[in-house]
Length: 308
Image (cartoon, rainbow, N blue to C red; front, side):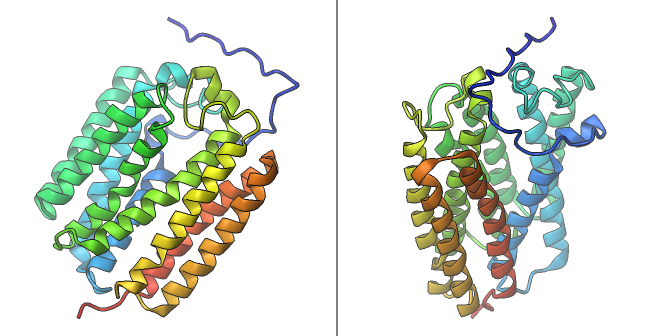
């Protein structure tokens, strides 16, 4: 059955195009969402680095990156299989491999399952069952909880941040270290960072999301003021947690100063946007969040404290 055509946007409410069209690549490559999968690998690698006191064993680290990357790509492919009919109705996603007809749904399902299975088994065989279990848990939470919950409750935003934060525990345990307060602090940073990031994206794409019934922003919020306040609150929480690695002795003072500076810049951007929630201001929040996390991870990598 052909996908139902989406209604044309209302000129009075249409927003400027968000992002630029990407040239088509091989459908299997696109299914893995390499940008997101790569970011998850970097997150897990940074956690591995910190747990190792800045002196990681390179072979286990490479195994961690490889297994995490494959499993993440598989989970992302499976998500697109589950949401293929919804993707066909949204302007942002209608050109993805499955709704565009460049790959059959069954082939995408088999590909996603294979990648996920190989990634989890790879981790279990090389760095242990615990990082493999956290990886499987992350995939299950993403596909079985977050994906269906998006059409039922705003609570999906919080649920979806859990699989995005679990790479902190994947990398930490892959380094051979049991989860400790430091691991959970990194989990908290990665969890809280996603909230203003996702809320900004949900506001920018609200027409597409409303078309398919996604609840990724607070209900009864026509002017966006409530979502703006939530972005500010979550960023304040992020700022407080982001300095904890220095307080716990996981990093030096360079990281601590940098984390404070990044958090203040992010908070200022959210505060300005919360006053009017215009497209340009919220777009700045989205791109500020894209800069925040890699810069913070960079500070973690260069200023990790050695193990005592």
